[in-house]
Image (cartoon, rainbow, N blue to C red):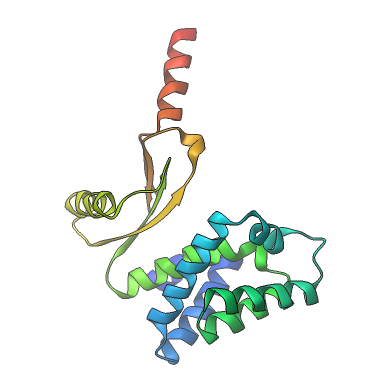
Length: 184
């Protein structure tokens, strides 16, 4: 199974693969990747944008107009802007976070990297990200592209997923294990 085929599973994988192929063909891979990173940050910070993407009450026309406005205000490249319009028309905006994740994995595979999904309790500094990538590279023997999500619910520590492997050093998990041990 190729790296592309291993990522392209499910709805998000099909959309991510289509966008990836278009970006490669248009020689706009870096621009699309940067736009998707900007969009991912905006989704993490804006409850209104999240509602636009996920609410079934938003009509196709309103969703298309909304994402067009978002694309303009975030200065997204034209390919990503058009892609968002297609997602709105097909009522697939709710799949956008998974599509961004799958696109990032495809781009990492193209660069010869492994993609690691990292969940942190707070935003990691550039130095922390660099140190984490170096640690993972040492353990895996390959360059690692980090896909970082912030989730304050894990309280502290990190959850790192690389392929089918998961390292959970979150405080929430440790406290849960301690609670189970105390119950006996």
